[in-house]
Length: 567
Image 1 (cartoon, rainbow, N blue to C red):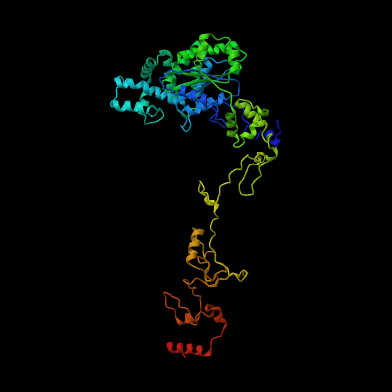
Image 2 (tube, one colour):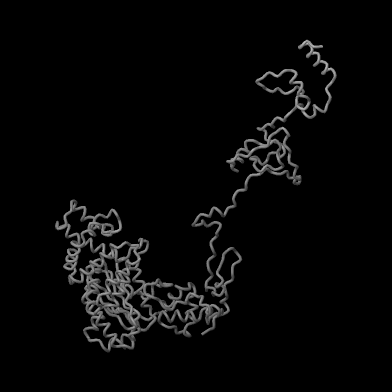
């Protein structure tokens, strides 16, 4: 094996071949349609049958571990999950699967919350459909009186989930059923037991259990805990658990296809007795629940060492009713696995595996590619780290150790001419600056001028208590100051002369003093003596300092003597 060019990649695990094991139900990191295609089509054909059709016992075998059984089952789950309920069976202690553990696995699967359903679970939907289907014959026969029989039957057939929504105030049928469940429950149980062919006692138990669960508010944190206590706190003998499990799977099978999946059975390899008990349990369960599908996923070595030595001929035939065997990988499948994780690197990586004899199972290919990641035995000098481009494209730091593909990559698209899938954010463009008056380009900024003092006769401007900056700016735009600053930040015409006031505004009149005494209104007529005795203190300051002319004084004295007859 050739040492990788960049050993740090293997140490950090930062490569596309690091997932060696998969878990049933979890989406895989990559998928190749050509790998195990025939087996996948056979399984899909056997499982894609109507609800009322009988089920199958399917034995899925692989020559050894790592052929992709779990990956194949997960793909089936995602393809058929809309119409089938897949229930994975987990071995307690590695080698114990019985009625009690399967009952736990089934309820755990049923109480999982549905996506975007407000807390509803699969068990809620199953209960509502069962109540609706069992109530229809009672309404049709008239045993349950109804004013609009046809309308009620139509709602029960076409909208069972909405009709039995115990949490909606407008679902009158659901609330009526809750109020009368003591009388209605036994009739629904009898109808379901006769239809499915199951014991009335176990069917009544599940009808009562499902009603309690479905009628409990969804946001009640103890809803699932109360369900588990109701089901498992009773005596848990193997026979009682088996009957209870058969009834539950039978009720579910009347509404959907149920698929029991037994995978990861390596724990049975050294325990033939446990394998025999497990095989007997599956055979009995499959015979009791006619519509159930059972998939036993096992490797050839475990099947031959643990199961076959203790199985009777009849039980072995029952377990292998439908046998699907995974074939070893050919070169096309090997390349497909590599290309699904590292496009363009199939031939280079495959040539470095097993000295020309690569393993023929998926996990071996992935493991070998992980060990050889970063170098191949062919054309070693041509494999160089990818350099970071000088353009605006960003690449992750670990991309430096990715070998270049054999064929040159296509040129990246032109970002300037390619329309963006999403509109550019508004904040990407700079916000427009607040308009200001333009400065003269040839002169420097003038030093600040001293503030203009108001005339002595003017009163100071009082700021109102409800002052707001926005209102002040609006008022300022309509009343320009008498003296403009060098730069007017509120000017709406940037090209105007900063030193001149706007043309549509006139400068306010400046106060001026007159030689005539100011006229003062007084309700009482003032005598000439009182007016005269006021003295120069009432005159303006500059007038008091300047002595009056002689002609003016003589003229005033003459007018006084003529008016009052004094000399």
